[in-house]
Length: 258
Image (tube, rainbow, N blue to C red; front, side, top):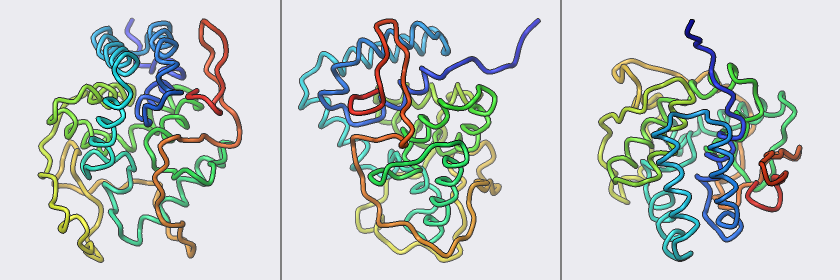
């Protein structure tokens, strides 16, 4: 009999979250532990595990300046590869604030409280949250954002970046195929700062049926707006500490990469 139940992927999701964070010295000190955790859990296909292992080796062995500048070039200077999910959906429109608040409330209902230095739609934070949920709920939660993840994956694949394997792994854990879709070219700098349409609606890029609307169900109106976006590389997870149990011991969420 075949089972459609999602695999247990708590450790894998946490490793993927850390792989999408700024590769500072603390991160690189634990690349061997992350490689071991992925192999121990076996939540991904062998080919994907091999790609992630190669990426972790590269990040751990290459000069710090090289991997850090590569990260900044990919994720800080490209809109299609931005790791803040609602930037792909709402841009800088006023709908982004209420969506943020609703996502924060989702975390708080699960007993997790986000630090003030982090935004809730930052993909590493989203993956950390998913890692705390039962497998089926985690898959369903990630399925809600799969069309956005697919856009980022497609942009990274178009650049032939090894980071594409991280987004591919996220799609697979969401029960989706890691297939690239056509995306619009990166906008010019002046264009990217243009005021969005007031009633432009949500982006449909990355959906299986891009001509049809696919609203995210975590958007709700609220009288409050969040503070201005601040990008912090060293993501801090909620006030409740999470820990990743590795063969070599337990590494905690703060202050190191786990």
